[in-house]
Image (cartoon, rainbow, N blue to C red; front, side, top):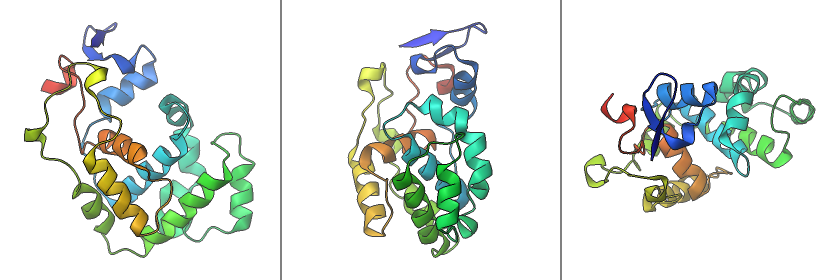
Length: 190
């Protein structure tokens, strides 16, 4: 089901009426995202989102970018315990030690990969869009797919953390690896 708001454009119902959520829906969600750094940021933020609402992370994203050095894996990989403590003391982000430490550990893995390797690895699990019917309602949108399970398994085999299959499916949706804009949403035809 889609909803229309002030500009009369039908949107996926989850976008609601919050201006930041609508902007995210309209400009980012489901748009193909490439690049190791961009995908590392997406992986980190999706990991921080686990157990929380995405709008919480979206509102905190500017501060996350600031305190995590723009999610540059070469910098984040070198964070030490003082950086962990600095991050855990910052009320502008989600202060969860396991998630902070996973982000630092994941950054080291990305840093040690060849340029473009993370991008290539993640996108290799994107399903063929021709084989995917357009969801008509949120009930038609899966939380986990065989592709997100396989991506999660491949990432965990490399040592990545906070990359479970549900988290990876959310990443696949937000990074445009799958297009789950609902039938009738203006983004479908854009």
